[in-house]
Amino acid sequence: MKRRDNTIKAYMSLSCKVGHYGDVFGELLKMDIPVGDIFLLFGQIDILCKFEFDTLEEFKKGWFNRVRLIGGEEAWITRTMTFIVIQSGGETLEEPFAFIFLNTQPRNLESVQESLLKISQVLTADTVFGPYDVICSVRAHDQKDLERIISHIQRIPGIQGSMTAIIAGMRV
Image 1: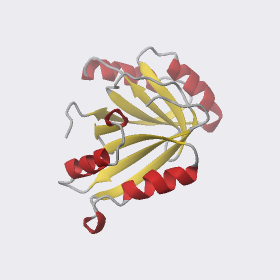
Image 2: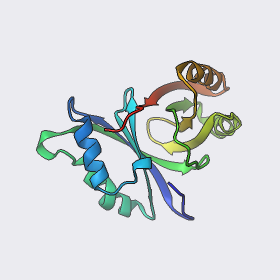
Image 3: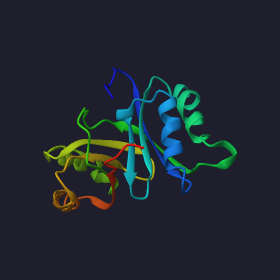
Image 4: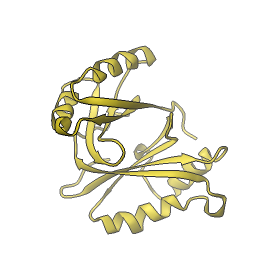
């Protein structure tokens, strides 16, 4: 996603009803969300979408309500979490290997973000409102490389916890 000036950025995570992962992905594509802004994940979150918009009302009417109602009565989406970015930590066109969701000590939030952005494998490190404090995208060559990167990140002072979701290597 190419960032425009004065826009708001958000992530929306989706957990899908068993057997409907592909259905939800297909519906997201029909909404004209760019393919590069929809990530199929392995982990506690099934799908992560990135959005850009001018106002929260635009997000609510244009995306949030439409996305959360996918599957209607069948409830294909079982849980959503929305993360509004309060401080962007870089933009990239490179597809990440994984997303790392971090919790920090409140007083160390800015220093954690700065430390993350000094790691060459970190593509972005966005400070967000939500159950996590930072959403970090990383590049890795393989799982062993990812383990090394996660270990490095977890040693940053002020990080209290993390959850990693690897991006699925396939598209539904």
